[in-house]
Image (cartoon, rainbow, N blue to C red; front, top):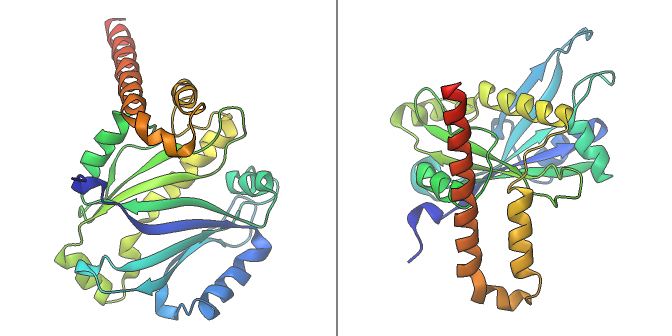
Length: 262
């Protein structure tokens, strides 16, 4: 039987667009996707050094609702543009440039009923995360962000996953009913993630979804197989992932111990 915390559902997606496409995207969401004014959950702005006024960084549009439990029934797309001046570095601009296009899906947020259990499950199999599990003050939302999904020899893909657990309490539901829709997305969470990705891209050390070594292990096991044959070796693959992660954890613990002793 499938474990409950692995019953993942798409919570929201983040869409990167070129500045020229940003307002057009807003218009398309309002017209083609039928997003009403009240469906614009938030719009965040920032004034960069040297600019005279704030620039819009991102907006999120609710593009659908359906029958579900306690408000967990919304389909949301967050749209982000590189709002920094051309003289400043921007990981969003770099991602778009590397993709050679006007837009790019950055991450998909998958909702789980038990984020702690899922996070432990993923870490035990060698998955890298760029943040710890983040929790808002009222504990209505907890979330964590993974490393990027890309081949070791390639440039960063700009694609990663967010995993969330939403437990809307009565206070949050009341806020939503009063049109305080921004309660679903915290300023600190968005800006914190944005700044973390900026640090990664400027350092040239972007965290991968799994380490290069683990990728090589899995690649070696699966490369000789046809896609329909991989199911027959999944136990072997998962065992290798568990062994790798356990070994990595032991090395990390040893280093921590040496640092503490020093």
